[in-house]
Image (cartoon, rainbow, N blue to C red; front, top):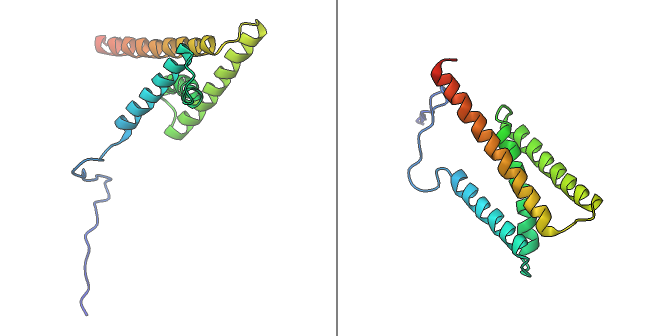
Length: 141
């Protein structure tokens, strides 16, 4: 009887890149999620009567603030970042709804616009803060 010796990968954690498509689906999934969220926002703001309006708008209302909050929390591990950003998105959506109901100005398009503005401003502030940090590091400050 002969013993087969199988060589294992090195223990330094290096992995070989797999050839062919399907190596990394995260950019593709991020693009698809962005397209779905944009379609939801467009349907909500246009006041469409499509049956896809509800689910796509709900996805937008959760994904847009979650992405903005997640971008601001780079220091957390991935699971904690996802958990905190989703909880923050739900809390922000409820805060917008409660505020609009309190002033008797509730509308779907108004809530969608408020979430869009918040998410855009948050992402803009994160981008500006990071670019300012890079500039300061380059100057040696």
